[in-house]
Length: 379
Image (cartoon, rainbow, N blue to C red; front, top):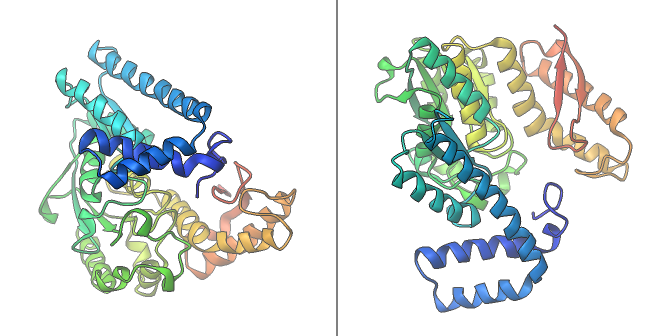
């Protein structure tokens, strides 16, 4: 969907063509284009009004200039360490093209050990906080990654530009840690429920089972993954990065963990938004708490990422649609919707044995749409 909800108004009409033009422009610079691709590029340019393309590229130029100035501050010693996260990116496109230019500048100035560019955004504040604390403690935590499928670390998730396994290494390094190849050497275990398909084929939390790619059922063994989680939790703190689907939890896995009474074994859990957002949240949480976790934060993530995003959000959409509203238009029913969702979330949390679910006291929609929710608990 190419929406102007978070973009300029012209994105409704020309978002798809702008995306395609970015991919083709990047491909042309990197590899050249076939005759068919060259024709497609010409068609994109013809389809996008000149003033729209100019405004779009001007906006990107401003953003790129800010990134270049940030690198300059690092070079001058004003900044010690810099993360330039790549939000909602892809292997080819406008962002990839700009990233290539930044990387050339960084490499030429021998700053690669001080400037990290990788997929992510919303979780970066937590990652940098973990890094600061690790530096203050003079610690370099070791993280062992256990994936739900053989192909998991090789999949490029939706909204990202590189294999999941590589991006996780960037996030761990940015947080001041390192990966290890033996669980016994780890400070904590990060269980990664990985996607089996990336890009547009990667499932969303609300995707029906009949619409999911068959690899979700044939290329991973969730009972074995759950069994490994149990075994690891007896020896090490365990975090679960639930990233097999975008924008919410994987109900199939979470139902297995619930049935096997493995939810209490989790020191940390996250399954929100992109793979980088969720995994980075787990990594930072475990480092900040030295693997001890935090029951309240984990309960919040379970309620929001599993309860709301993967389940109750669909009920909320049905409720608002029955009243003439929609995902981005609550039609003046927000107070009543919040009361409805509060009752549904309490019931869901209690039925799924989420600690503290009975203390949920309010639900809010900070952006006045269904995508984000704020859950408020009693102290």
